[in-house]
Image (cartoon, rainbow, N blue to C red; front, side, top):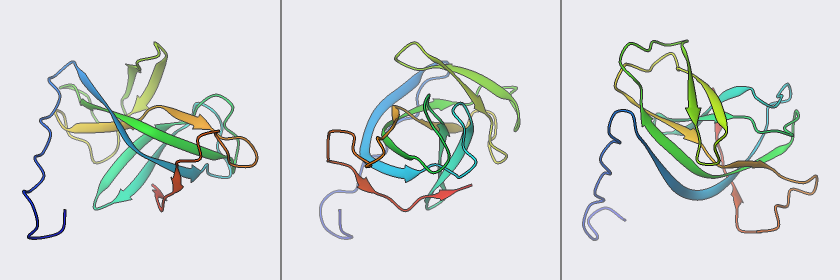
Length: 138
């Protein structure tokens, strides 16, 4: 919404402690870091201070293209500190290890990319709807 046009966006409430919120996002494509391996946890800087945690999926290799179509938002449990590792169960039932980022405080909201898929060598996923995005590896 452009400034001065229409009502301001209503912020979504944070998920309750011990719960998570799954939401769709505009699909984005990113190239995996050159030294990437499946299971690595990396941080994407999306601008404006937003960070999206990304657990690299099965089949990831250095330089491959990844497509992110959603995110899971959850509150960092009390007593968890930067560097601690959490286990998050995603909707598919898979368990993903998440390392608490350096700037996270207990009770703060964290976002992890989900679902994420590795695209074929031509960069296609069969959908054709995603566009490349400028994100920064943190």
